[in-house]
Image (tube, rainbow, N blue to C red; front, side, top):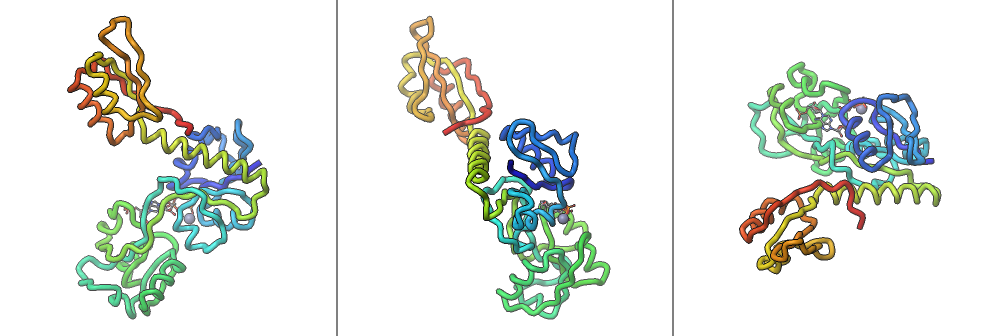
Length: 283
Ligand code: PRT
Ligand code: ZN
């Protein structure tokens, strides 16, 4: 049985549950407790504050965790980052009052910087030989300059809207983050096998979400040209239709190329084009 720690509530909760459901680990979020078992995979979900997730995975209370890379870095825990999950994207940046001139990191010498991420900030200041005072505050860091508690802030930014509405501007992007799957470093062989199964499913899901299944009818005279336009996993499936002049063609294409391919296929006479989403692709 693998125990996976996820955020109880907050920005990563919903997408963590969605991700587990996408890979067919069914967790009923309505019945959320402190600990709940998945119905169809040997896992149980432990709901925690995000700040506590790196620590419980490092000490083995949970085998896996879904948390922001920023928390892993800040807590400095010895865990393995086994997958980047592609949601919860943000950065931690230095921001200053918008009417101040900024020419480089020297600006911060002698300044007070408010943050909830002192470890990451201290590392950055050290690397850049900046001597600033770190004021640790949790929550509403963005109001610190206006409140006179600090001269600048070091905080999470996503759209940047919060900075703007507090009269601040982002001047240094220090740390890029997204949600990651972390693992305890001492998993048993059985636990590692379950983790590999989870990673395999995540990868299948990731590949399928970037691909579409394409079906169409194509006139015989254009078949060769259509095969040139359409790559497939091995090669496209071609089936003769009752009408000898026509074939049915099936293929898998990458989502970014879809509309370009459709245009080219229409130009050579493809008809009845269907585009379907793929649930999973197993390579
Ligand atoms: O209660 P708990 O301790 O579990 O949650 P929390 O309040 O500490 O964290 P939470 O739920 O706010 O965020 C969890 C994780 O989501 C963070 O650790 C990041 O990895 C990630 N994340 C992604 C963000 C944002 N985007 C984000 N925009 N975390 C916080 N924000 C804040 C930001 O600081 C700003 O105040 O959201 C506000 C809006 O941002 P803008 O730039 O879009 O205006
Ligand atoms: Zn938190």
